[in-house]
Image (cartoon, rainbow, N blue to C red; front, side):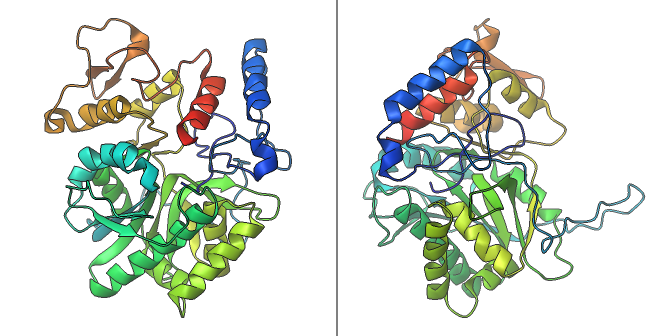
Length: 382
């Protein structure tokens, strides 16, 4: 955790609202009651830059629709007449999953049993806070000294530790060109991510970081919304480390305090300071989707790369069965289901969850999506 969470549900807004100091935590029940009342009245929950609706138990700051500062120009659009000269391979891609030891036997195990199986041995590292005795996968578990069960010191510490680990692995293997960083409650499609990364270039050698853009905090006016994870190329990792990896660790913690304790906003400040180019990456579903928006995501012109806030094993298995098919090795759907709220269609194949209960589906119902999603996020993190 530690990245910005959605205070509002909307496409292309991989934003999230993060746990505030203790004063915010004291109002959990009244806040959830207010959310339910808002949904019942049909009013719209609106994300605001300076007065954001905060969600206790969540990790990410609000989406504000802001664009990168002038020091980080957008990449020029390519003419359709230009020949696509993008490289055919992204090179070796490393994956870093942030986790907390209290989630090792649930969220992390679900990851290791599903999409992590498609990552080559040695390319997936878990940034944790304790050894994982039950690990039987090929994943490497890094037991850091970051605070356990902490939504800000622990998360901010792990964000920096992950970049330090990426730098160390890149030093050992010069074929590594990218690193992707993501929470442990996400389903990722490594092959689709790597196809997308293969199309990215860094002609000016500035370093590139990719993700959902547009989050903000009162003192950190622009941030990656890392609920969708973020990718950084080799040059970006080296520039972020600078002269010393311990300096990066210190900068992240200082920035975290300044950026209202949001780890992804803090890391973004490092990227901005080092003049690393920030670009959007399509396909990162960093927010909990309603049923209609989930259906749109699997029928879009670009392939979905990942889904965040996958809160149960059945949700993780549903996605893995849909995207990996027979490779998944188990059935997670009910082929006889007729309830459209229980099913979706991907590449012409109908996939149905075991039930239409939100615990079984990776989406939430359209009619009460905002309130239900926010409540589930609180329950999942507490």
